[in-house]
Length: 71
Image (cartoon, rainbow, N blue to C red):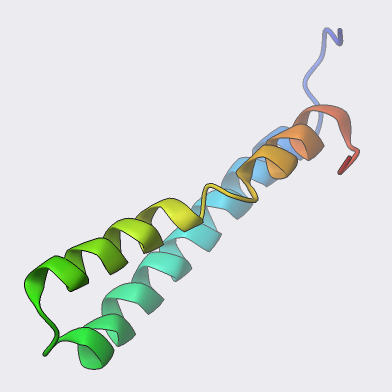
């Protein structure tokens, strides 16, 4: 276990924050135009899915921040 922080942790956190902000803006900007007329429950399911889908690559990303290796 390392005793000193690496450059990957602050860069990774800033990168994650930037990507999530961009992702949220894109979803908030374009999804209402695409699904705005759909039933409320379908919209809810789609927004729930989109709210959770960003978690899929998070494990590998956090592993890279800690170890420097993507695997």
